[in-house]
Length: 303
Image 1 (cartoon, rainbow, N blue to C red):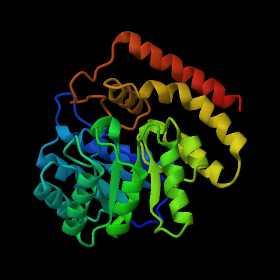
Image 2: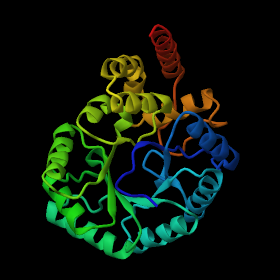
Image 3: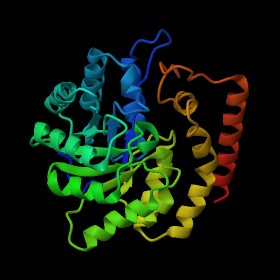
């Protein structure tokens, strides 16, 4: 079961589709194997970049079953929904299939800190003994949660064991949360998203690792490991080598297509098909990605 000591790299998994848009079960297997080979210490499925909103209930369940059957790594399942009964229903499926915990994003924008605290108290009471992750991603949810409100949620929701930190800018929020823990507050694992754009700085602020889906999970593996061992200059060199492609993959609306193209190119999935509207690459975009990959490989080989 997931707990507040969780660390490392929980890769946000893509959801593979066949060219006709159907769920690609065989690619789920190869994708999971790929993430494991590249150093993931856990997997997170049915997230925002996993196109959870594009899946039917049956497809979500099939994704959970296939991933949990393929790996012994801890699996976190995104269960966010405007309907509390849907959160509870998918949580039951996930935990019955051996998931380590679930992830929930705030609902109902615009929302005050008080509204968000009350919402997560409801979540916590409904999930009872299920460990859960709070996804703080205001760029998508449009709900901004202050560090003080997060601290209150952690204090009143014992089964909230992790923060998926995706605020931007958010480095000061990390420092505030860690300062509260240094003063005696309950420790919560903090893993960071946003495609890894700020991972090095986030590690230096005291986070426990990454929870994002950049198509080169080994970058996150290496940055986390090197920072934990005090090899900061080496971590900076590696981070700098990957950063142009990280930046490209984080483009709103286009990033998912870029990520799936790279995952297909690397053999993780068979097809780059995405259901999300507008997620297609032009020939010019593909040329840009290929140039960035070539330059990235050259920089890494020179290190």
